[in-house]
Length: 183
Length: 128
Image (cartoon, rainbow over all chains, first blue to last red; front, side, top):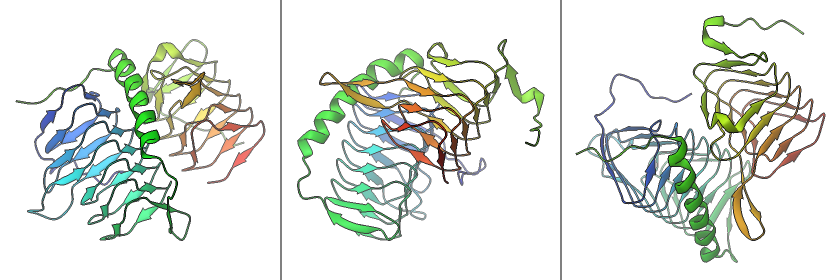
């Protein structure tokens, strides 16, 4: 299911921000920085293969997510912004992601893609390589139709997310061991 | 019905006849209630830590399935609500179930995504 070979996994150099909850079962390889307040569920895979990965504040990375920096050797860092939600089973290999994006279940964002803020990638959507997705786009449907989100409220998203994150940050440490920064 | 053969060393069997794979990720087992003769296959993920999960009799949860209770608004506050799965349910490989309720005798195909707060009635078929 996941195209990762055991052989060439880079050593883990992890920096975890304040208040972030990273579960023990999350597989993290390579140079990864996780911002404050983010919640990483178990069985998430963060693979900084070709360059570091910088994950912003208040993100939620759910189970079976794969975040893979595969930009070729010598690639720059892969930056995920704040307040994103990566749902179960999504695979993200993009160059960068803005704030408040939602990548729904089993979506696959290929490498070289630049997602700007407030993008919603629907379930099982494949975003092709190198695409530049502008602010507020919703990708859905078999034909990947784009749709501008006119009346989308950014405050509503961040408020709901903040409450969701509070609940997760309280309940997850009861049931999981958490990972701390290496160093 | 063809009999399903399994590798006995890979599964743990409980008193009530549940067969749970050793590689399944089960968190919050206090909140997970399989009511007998349930089969949970390899690499399934059951997140009981978020909310209760009730699985009815004779259900089969295939490989790589994620059962992730959803978050819902209750009296203007967000709260994780429990996930109830009925009897004789077959959840196909790779599916993601974030539903609130799955009825009895449901067949969920492979690689399906059942999103938050869904309620699937009895005797339904969800195609892959």
